[in-house]
Length: 158
Image (cartoon, rainbow, N blue to C red; front, side, top):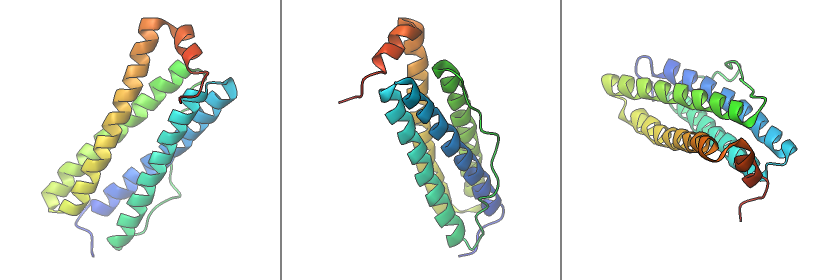
């Protein structure tokens, strides 16, 4: 199936953002594991895997639309040196992703590509839940203090 005007460029832009997020979250997860924050390690690693699944879906859809996935391009990977810095950078990454998805949803509606629009809407719901989780963690740190928050991240969730 041939892609509608601008859809392949948009999908490749989203793929670039996903590939960047995969790397950023993976490094943040490994840092948390190294620091002994098992709960954060598992949660953030899971988010990296979610991004991999999105990248897989985007690549499949680009191919379905007879395009070529551009996996050589990546944005700057932002690595936080502390957990609060990681949350701040991850929140920006997710907010940027949501803006791209929103732009894509509008564009797909305009050109009449409702299949791609639906896929992007599903991805936007996941990104929204990631944003909510990060904002909750940041608020929890404000309320209980960083030391208390991090003490709770040492043990793995059961």
